[in-house]
Amino acid sequence: MQVIKEPDVQVYDAVRSLLEAGGALIFPTDTVYGIGGSPWDERALVLVRRLKGREKSQPFTLHLPSVEAIERFALLNTEMRQVLGAFLPGPITFILPAREDAPPASVLEGKVGIRVPSNPFFQSVMLRLDRPLFGTSVNRSGEAPLASIDMMIEQFSVVDLLIEGETGTGVPSAIVDLTSNPPHALRGELPEGLL
Image (cartoon, rainbow, N blue to C red; front, side, top):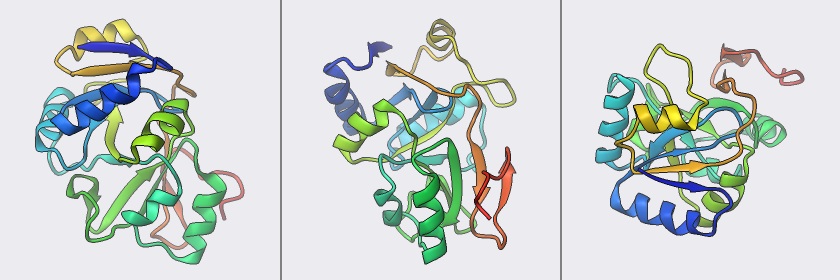
């Protein structure tokens, strides 16, 4: 495993090369560290599912570098755009109606879960790459997310790259379903002012 600390100038090239090669990486977000890769790359998807002990039927969240990128993968109405513009970037995963070309690994029953982390790695490296990542927290299914870099290296050593950077709350993102009326929280609480 290669470990690079943000904001090292090598980060951009390392992530670009990794995504082109179908590798998996551990990356910082505004909540906890995530593990993932290109949402269209079967090698990365299989590896992360195996490491997590996760079923293929469970979708991965799509992590995007900007609010503007959401419409590439989700069908939005005016109300959804207003909510997303008000609360993203930020520590919330929104469940949205999926477009046909949304990555299948992030879609379940016509819906896609999307995050836009408020985090230096996403605001610089991923925005410049203009690529999505599939992601999930760094832990075995059913266990708490790992916060220790040493433990991540020990337990997930087969992952190709670890970007060590700034994380936020230490608690996984809230999940809010915008496909229901009214919207409701699937994990955590509805943000104040959403309704």
